[in-house]
Length: 316
Image (cartoon, rainbow, N blue to C red; front, side):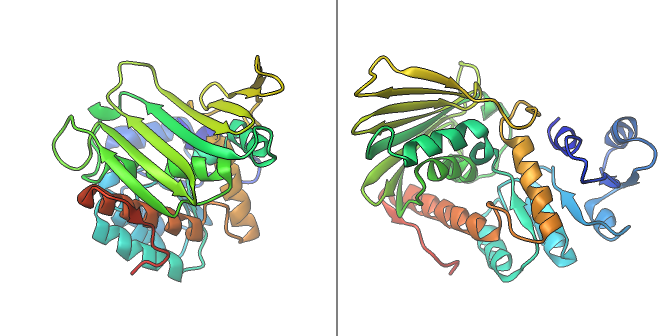
């Protein structure tokens, strides 16, 4: 729904193989990708099969760690989604390996690649609404029905949304404070607030995965000279300033056709393709990914303590 349509927007790649466990998935591969694509029964077979330049990973969270370890062992470039693993120990182990390798590993954080967010970041960082006071991201979804890892919700979803706020403000937070909700057993609650300290500028990520409302992601930014609201799925920016309190609405045209319903996904895939071709890390390469997962570990620490947790700069 997303990866293949995004790849097909590029004339720089060729899909040569795919791996799937079930016969139904293998038949879908044959139907969609054609008879010339090699089909393997497991990711291990694919990684050990014909020569490939890169892989794209779409697997359940529960086997992310195993797949990422196999990719690191194979030394092949990879496009993957968070989380790296479903336990703190697993994440810490993979963080060390991420920072020890120079292979191209691109974390799929489509929010930060969306053209609307990039345009909003230009406005914010150019001072259009003045000095930033607060920023808040809100997610509303019905994802509570899906299984997820037993980690704090803000940690599980944090890489996407923290990267979005960081990209918007051009900074990385120093510490985090989690205010977790209830709704289900375990660490992954249906509702979660995480507060971010950007050296005195305050950010908030407000997550509700058991919402009756339609899927939405919005970011509100308040400055001392106005306000900005970004609607991620609608690709719109509402801008109000002291000079123009009525404000204006900006519709941003995506660079690529939206795939899977996710603005920025095709742009993220394009950035990965360029990283592979140039053999240079992408924006969401190993260094940035490691920082986001260290922030995730701080989120878990704050969940346990109930207080602020400093984001470490090292994996140990």
